[in-house]
Length: 383
Ligand SMILES: [Zn+2]
Image (tube, rainbow, N blue to C red):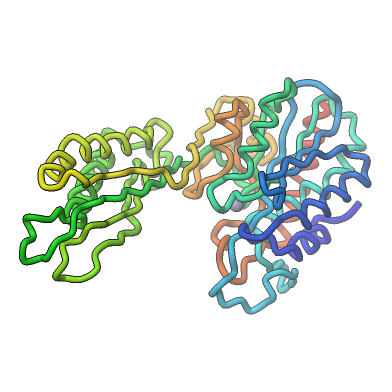
C-alpha cells in the first residue's frame, strides 16, 4: 500500500494551476488505479487539454458512495512562499505545498485507501471522481455529471473532500456573477444633457443593487446556519470614462449575488434587469436611440444544503463521530452534484484557512485522521 503522504508528495509535484493542463496528474492517477486493476474513464474537455477521471469499484449496480475531489489548484503568482510550492516540504508535522489542503490531501487519502477498499467485501459500489477547473467556477465537473446522468448507476451519496478539518459540513451558499454593460452616448461635457452618461446610469443600477442587498439582509430573511445569515449582493469591478470633459459612452460593472438555499440569485439579477429596461432605458433612449443596457452571466454555481436527517448527513455523522453540522463560506462542486440528484456532504482534511495562501499546508495528523475516516467508510460499505 502506498501511504497518503507519499501520494500527496507525488500529486503536489504536478503543477495543476487551473490555467495549466491537468493531464500529467490524471495520467499518473490512471496508471496507479489501472495497476490495481481498477477501470478508469477519462472525460476530456473540448480541447482535450484537461480531463476528469471517474472510476468505480466494488459490486456493480445502483447506489453506493462517491468520493470527489478537484485536481486543480489556485496560482502561486505574486505570493511569497518560503518553500517550493510544487514540492512537498515537511516541517514540524506539517506538509507544505500548493494544494496540500485544497485539496490534493484528500485525493491522496482517497487513492491510498483504494487497495483497502478492493480487499473488502463491499456490498455497494464506491465511485471515485477527480475533476478539473473547480477553482475557476466549478466548470470541469459539469461534463462529468453530464456523462453520469446517462447511466443507471448513480451514487446515492457524494462526499466532497474539501478541507473542513474533517468536520461534517452540509452546505454553502450559491453564487451568481454577472456583468452589466451600459452603452450611453458621448458628447462634449459642456453639452452634457445632449449625451447619455453611461457612468451615471451604471451608478443608478449599482445603487439599486445596494438597496436590494439591504432588503435581503432584513431580519425576516435570515438563516442562522450561514455566515453572514442572509443573501448578499456586491459590486466588485467598475470601468468607464476616458476624460472629464467627455460624457462617457461606456460603463460596465461586475456584481455577484451569494444566495441562501431559499433564495434564487437569478431573481435578483432579473429584478435589476427589469428596473434597467423599464425605468432607465426609456430615459436613455429618449435622448439617443443607440443606447442600451446589457446583462451577461460570467460565473456561478448552485448552493448546497443537505437535510440533516438525510442518509448522506447520517453517514457523515457516523464517519466523523459528530452530528454538529455546519456550513462553509466557500463554494464547492456539491451544489452541482446535488442538482444532478446526488445528495452531497463536504468533509475533508486540512483547513481552508491555509487554502489559496502562500505556504499552504496540511498537518500529517489531519492526513492520518482522513485515512482512518476512509477505513470507517469501507467498514460501513460492507454492512
Ligand atoms: Zn477546493
